[in-house]
Figure 1 (cartoon, rainbow, N blue to C red):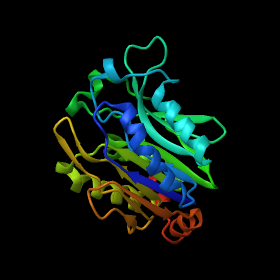
Figure 2: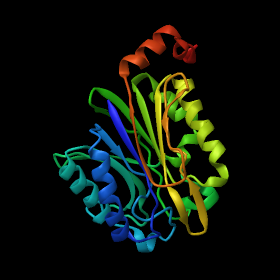
Figure 3: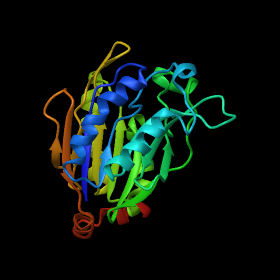
Figure 4: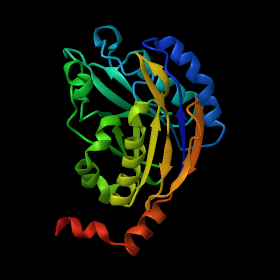
Length: 254
């Protein structure tokens, strides 16, 4: 499986400008022939708590953008949006995997970032999401979820690749890089972290996006804090080989 991450800047709370900026980047990523294109957390707004302004329905412009881009490129694409179902008073931080056939699957962020009062403005999710793309089992998480190892452990037996999308600030970049590597090593799986760059609401983001293999080695990563497309290969057979050679996951139940 080939995956493409788009490390991109986000214009604060301006969906149309972000759609305009992302279309050519998505086209460039599609030219590399990936099986999945990955955008960041809240790719159309930035990590905003102004949910009364940015929230949208599940048929709103951001999800429609993902669906249209998946259809246009013929490639599944994912990112999260501030989506609110009818009758709800708060949105979810809602990751959507959009497919070229106009179908979609979704995951609502479980662990809300109380330090930034995300829990005051968003609703937490309860379920996990694992899908099969190009013969590879892919599980999805969002930003702060990365700090909660048990959720990753629970999905490890049926996961080849974890995808973590984020708006992770530069001040804690070391945590981001360390935790991505830790989740890969302890679960003997690939981990793809795609983070934003630029600044939003006074916070700087350095990107540091990367793909880590099941032994903790970096497969590919970004070299700068600029917008960048990076592509890496994931092999479910490598995951099986590592787990067979080092059957450490078996000891979790003992």
